[in-house]
Length: 392
Length: 102
Ligand code: HEM
Ligand code: FES
Image (cartoon, rainbow over all chains, first blue to last red; front, side, top):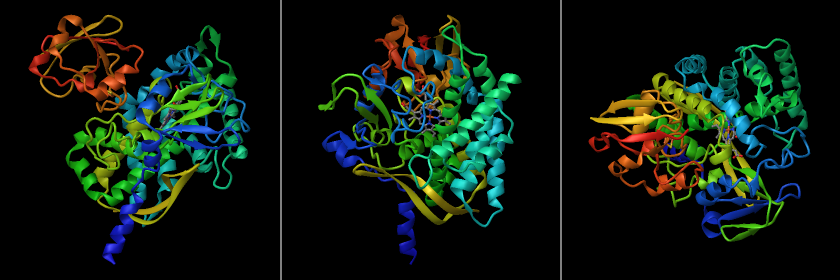
């Protein structure tokens, strides 16, 4: 009985590498998506090179097309800086970069620490709770108020939206849910333009990029991304970390005893989980990647999740080595479009690990349903649909 | 003890002393502008990019293959580029001059 329990336990915090065979044998995989097929690039070097080559592999295609599954049929608005190529990309990036580096400041980290400590204290009093909805979504939403510098109570609205702003459980692409976000942003942008404050909306509304004042449409294009790009990703990272510590209590003890490894532990968990599986690009000329022909105007995707398990760069790629010293993972992307929210996400995770190590002795998983993505021939576990645990 | 000079993009010169840890950590502790060290030094983020002053280049060893792979795809990189999280502070680095790239 005890043995069985152990067996089941090991599986839950394990994230198998779905791409290994294809990565070694071919270097790519193919998926169909609404008649606009995608060649997934699976090797670290190819992923990096392709991410770097923004001229042949563009992001500034028809809005929604670099996302897989494609969002061209559910939105017209361009996400900024995500769907813009250099040189314009740099002008937008330069504008927002200092704002998104604020998480390096001590004050910011104190606020995050309070948010996280309060949440942990709250769930410690419960017999059990569902992590995705009752912990990770709350943490992500409350922390986002700090990033945007808006009132804390806004997070209540975002929590009420549920876990998926763009996606719902039944249909892959849920236009209705996206509209909730779009309408909300229109309202907030109007408010900030009438009453400017010191939030991100106001900064963007007053910004001049390449000699032109940013339009409300562009402001919305930036804001959508801070909601959409930072939501499922942070939720998966937080949830999966809790599942990991439930099954590796010694790792949590180790962080309490050796706090200096916390940063490395965060990088390693983010590498292992790769909360965003892949992201697409549109090809602008007939070309080749790993000796495979790729046609003009088709799509490729940069598979961060596969690249992170490439044994060419990582020893024991399928193991969590908590203090891995050299860890050139691409969970936050690479080159031009690397993740703007990474500084924020890293601080959340660092503080989360520290606070868990301080406050929680033991995490027990009661029940869990895995979230398995289907990408053509690949079935990849990215997180949990729900996972009920108790903290002691 | 090693004395290390950082020259930031706006030509400010910052001299710091260190005994242990990585050069990136030393820079971050001393608030050297342009060295963020986002990934904490695991060679994943490239926010610790410096170019070694040619006159002091011989104080450093070779970059590892993983570090070279990162730099190879950095448009601002040249033959003197290093990710300074991969440089350990030791006596050998005493007197080195590093130009911060970002
Ligand atoms: C663990 C959490 C996160 C992961 C794993 C993650 C992952 C990624 C990845 C892989 C990319 C590259 C996309 C590409 O190359 O096309 C990216 C870009 C981006 N992310 Fe994140 N992200 C996370 C959290 C966040 C957060 C919290 C925010 C903001 C609130 C955010 C905002 C963005 C933006 C704006 C971009 C586009 C940057 C550009 O195009 O220049 N992300 N993210
Ligand atoms: S600190 Fe991230 S690569 Fe050096």
